[in-house]
Amino acid sequence: MMINRPLLSRYIAKSISQLQQNNHAILSLTAAVGASAAFHYYCNEPNFISSNWSKNGYSRSLALCEKELPNTSQSVAVAETTSTKTTSPKPLSRASLLLYNLKLLSYSSLPVPRLISSKDPLFSYPEIVSGVRRRQADELNLQNILSSKRLMMARQSQDQQQMQPILQEVNELVYGKGVTPQIREDFLAQYGCVGHTPEIVKYLVDELAKDRGIVEVGAGNGQWARSINDFHNLQRKQNNPTGKAFDLVLAFDNMQELPLSPKIYHQRTVPAKQYFYDKVKLASHVDAVKGFASRGRVLMLVYPSPGSMALETVKAYVESSDQNDTVVYVGEGIGGANA
Figure 1 (tube, rainbow, N blue to C red):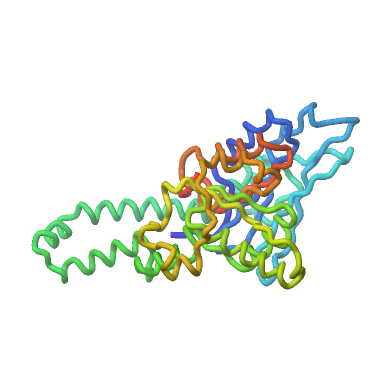
Figure 2 (figure 1 turned 120 degrees about the vertical axis):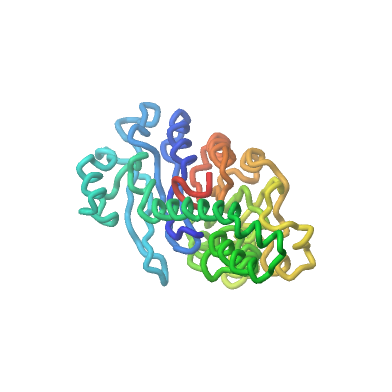
């Protein structure tokens, strides 16, 4: 099951509060899911401006504005830092939150600019809530099937006619209705755990990471890195054919949880030739962002595994350099399958 709308995950909420002790006025966090072509930038909680960040009465503030991606109806929330003497943005009021929860105020009607707190609807939205509930129900149904008497009897008798409908039910619960294991594996081969769109790739290359590059941690087989670098190289050849080649994405992975085994999908296979990135380097998540070559680049985390990896990566990234100020997070929200 894929949830189409992007959202910050738990680790981002944690990292925001922990990073307040660092001398970084704003950590721009970007969340995206390929299927939706939507991007969001955020900054930290209401008390993110400290006395250490204010000089001569000036302080940095967060400005959110809406704009459209090309050929898509999805909106883009953009965070910009400005130096002004104006009052800094505030989080949503209790009244606004109440109206939103009562469905009397739509998400698009919420005021901007605003500071994002843990209670903001950005951290939890109807699609993720209903999606998690469906997933929990599917997991319960799957457990019931696997422990059912009919499955035990079908196994004992090795009756293929009895097994076929049971396998069909299991496939629908695990992969979704109409999605076969082969279709899922083909998707993994082309995209990895989550898909991207041409609009997202173009936005990353032409705007967000232009002139600074990306460091991807947990790159897996490197499908996102491959697509982004291929598009970047195509743009470079068209606009500046004599210019120096530049790997827009530096991709790293510890190679312990690859979606597809390199023993099966080796370099001579068609998926590896068409979709995989052959420059994914072996490194721990912390070492990847601490390297000099990663300094100043946008950090990208695509569908990070549950656990502490994502939080540790964000912390190490921000602590490594004052130039490290932007994170692209691709995955599900609170209660979802990611960090």
